[in-house]
Image 1 (cartoon, one colour):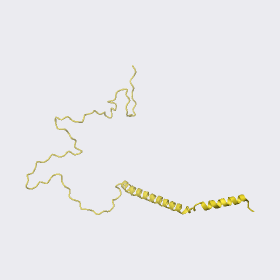
Image 2 (image 1 turned 90 degrees about the horizontal axis):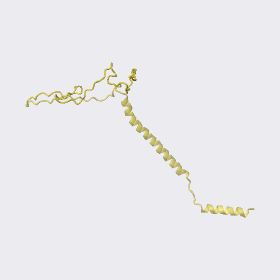
Image 3 (image 1 turned 90 degrees about the vertical axis):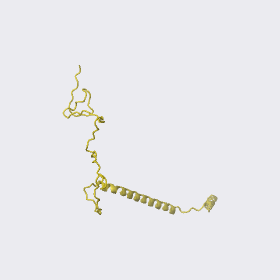
Image 4 (image 1 turned 180 degrees about the vertical axis):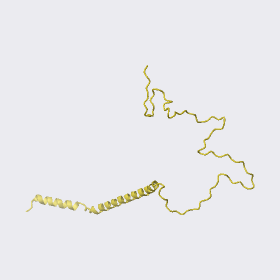
Length: 153
């Protein structure tokens, strides 16, 4: 019927099966970890997209320029412009008028006797582009006009 070798194999396998610990099913924890990872990936993608929109929207609106009309907003009353001169009080005497402040378009000249910090540099006129160039020395800026080289003597 059965050989002694088959009986030995059967008893050995039975002993091993009784000694082995029971293993829980690994599928539910793996599925749970996969769902958690998928949720975290989708959430981080949504947060990144939202951050990009929140950053890019004001920049895109600012790039449209001033051609588009501004959105409607309540108008606040504008205060009257204040003058730079102080208003004298009636009890004080009128001070002497101040000299005008130099503006950005007014050239500032030093007082007489003080040397000017700006040095006068002669400039070449457009008719003479090579006025300050040494003969035989190439110009760092090519003007496109042919130049004569000195004759070898």
